[in-house]
Length: 160
Image: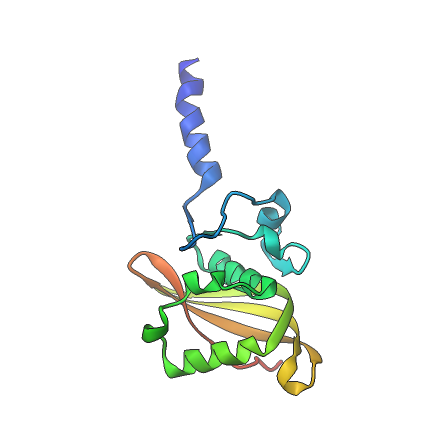
């Protein structure tokens, strides 16, 4: 019995992992297993289930795009404050607003100490191009600042 009592707290810590709750009034209690287990893809069908992010770049990117798919502003909790954003980042966010994202897929992650590039594939319609549909690869740039992963920019479309 003593062994079981010792293992239980450790198993709980391992299964929960380190999670960071988004800022604001976002409800973080309703998370379904499918959204958590299939971390590579977020669609209009499961975006509502992605209500939290873990402290890793892939989870932060997934949370950002799930918010974009839902059309809410929860994504702001993983980006620098507006006054701290570079002009290029602000332009990238404006361009992203013109896209109606329907699917996000994580492709791969490149690591360099406190900087990380998350390669993603987005399926979207683009309002600025007369509702043209597309599937494109982009890179999300993240930086580890004060123990937190922040989205600090995006690449232009990555050409094959």
